[in-house]
Image 1 (cartoon, rainbow, N blue to C red):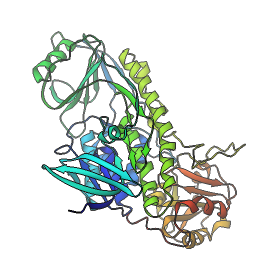
Image 2: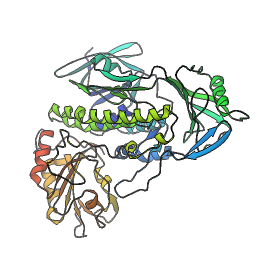
Image 3: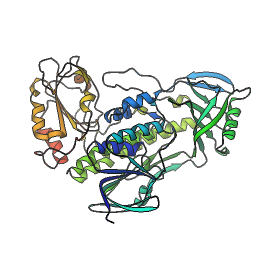
Image 4: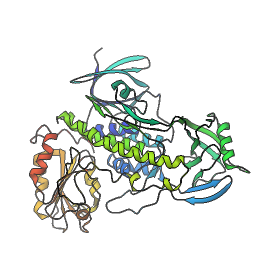
Length: 524
């Protein structure tokens, strides 16, 4: 039987694989996404979605569903035995600003996030193939031949690219022989799971930091009647049996005496050792790694899932361009941009976990770093820095939002203009009134251009009114500037004043021809 042909085979249907699948599907890429598990994951594991991830999910068209499925993080209630000894805000609230519409993390059980992404993928014409395992693969200059196993029947798939998003024990990574450097805290264990608890209020995240044998924490899970249990086992301690009776006993010991709490009806339980590891390569030929297959984090700070989602978001548009005819070397920038980010975020996670090990509440205070809004690609291959440039916003930075008014007089946002698989060109000032038409003639659907003005002097469909100057201030530009925003919401180029030739120079290597309309932008 001849092999089945696809453009991209994604191995692993967690948040990373699903994000990539959704992004590629809306670009019209022929893909398959498989997972060896018999069905969807049912636990809450990676329950924290950071603000930058919320922006990604908004672009993918699922933010409303995600917000409806969760809530803001509750305050912590600190217990010593049966006494409440304090209340503490681990994650301070921030006001919504014109440039940051989602300033705080959102609490959503991971299983629900995955379900929402699967629904979105279904609307784009694809489904996850559960119970399908990758057993082997080989690659050559033109593609990857992968052997899959489903219900005992083998199948050979021929893909132009294979992406391993198959978790910390990644079969893809191991087959590639890619190093996975770091450490495993062998002497430490953590029990996590989703449980019901009688007698405990759901308006706080309850923590017994000084419980005998290790910290016990119970976080209420939105949209359910359950709590996420986190039970620390100190070095030299004994991991309790994964039974309701044994775990309830640990809770009784933490909350004694006189407790009226009862833990029961566990729907998901797991024991793990804290790991701090990352790869030394993201790409080997036509095989790429993403998410936990490339980096694993300790359970502090809510960074692992979010970093994986942003791996996928960085990779998706690059794969889309390459499959449409751009040079394959564009994929080298995936590793060049994401490897330093993974190292930085892994260091932050390790620092927060060290505080958790020491029962230090102060060290668990979440700051700006955990929100991931400040992560950037400055100085990378797609964002070379200009000597002497002291501008507040530069190539490689996150592209900020700003409220505007569109040509119909309706309130709009820059994020509305960005939404979709295209590049976005913001042309500031009256001298750029014809820039949107020029961009259409040069780049077709690959680039959507908007004329950003401060006075209501145009009714062109591509005009945006920045009446209060929020966009000009956020981008640190004046009249005449051109700002090119990448499909993943990062600034690709800033010209002050704008030069169209610089935009053409940047985009030329990414498309097979400036005179042809790209195949990208199939679905928004």
